[in-house]
Length: 136
Picture 1 (tube, rainbow, N blue to C red):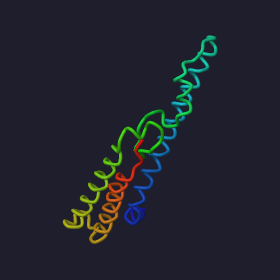
Picture 2 (tube, one colour; picture 1 turned 180 degrees about the horizontal axis):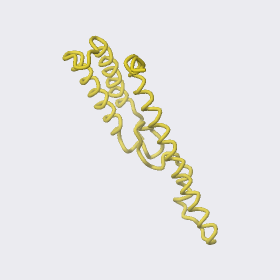
Picture 3 (cartoon, helix red, strand yellow; picture 1 turned 135 degrees about the horizontal axis):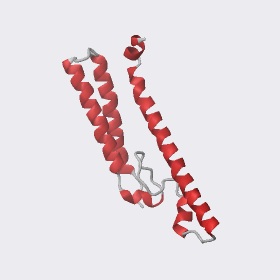
Picture 4 (cartoon, one colour; picture 1 turned 90 degrees about the vertical axis):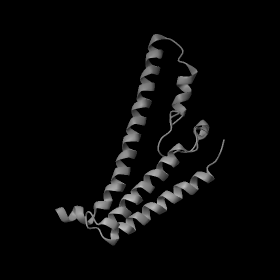
């Protein structure tokens, strides 16, 4: 059983992204459900709900930045903060794996340099992508 973790440790990264995306989707569902419950409360009281509440049902992002930093609506005016975060995150991972390849703490050897190279490419791609973002 331990061999599985030694051979396929890198699967933790896609699994982590999958879990983060699932959690984000679940939280978006809960926010929408809360808005619908609030609309039901207004309807039961016979009052007109605020226009902002109704308009917020059409906005899938709920006006919040997420780690994907999509360019939609007024959300593009928030800048490229999450791209900067991803550049720094992947550069940090690259540094850690390059240092591990140099020092050999866990015995990955040259594999650590290859993983560091992948993280450098990811960091550079997010850096370059930040220059080509649409401005509103």
